[in-house]
Length: 229
Image (cartoon, rainbow, N blue to C red; front, side):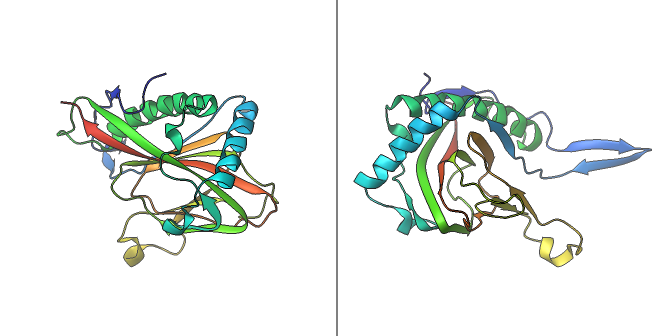
């Protein structure tokens, strides 16, 4: 198991823009916002262990939801992923691999010529339980670079419902001045157990109100990049 604070990444930018040519017209795609999405294969046993551990923490440790955007729910401390519990170590190994993949693609699309040739990253994580009626306000994550979310349990809801969905909002501040009424200003992800997401910390997002009975359990993390000396 590789420690999360000591992994070296070689995610080096190759282009600052994505370019396409159409009959002589060059189109540059500027400032792309990447969303990474994957699933932990055969996640049932892992998620059972994670859910049991998280519920035990809720019963025995402090609720930190008052310091966050969590409403009508519970949140652990920010050292949740520091535990030596086997299920968490397994999840961290999976997360490390996904971060490495994401950084390589993010580097190609977004990093500038001044990007260090190598750097390492660290992350801190916390668990959240939302029950029926729970939600999270729109927010961004400050003083970090990436946001990750792993879904342990998701209540069953009608397919048309927005219950517990994650909504990502267009981060371009100037969009309100020129956006046409038919443009899409948000993108919604319907979570399911075993899904893992990664996206830049500047991307505004919210959790829609959980309308179904049951518990929406997620593990969230902030990923910070550090130049290697």
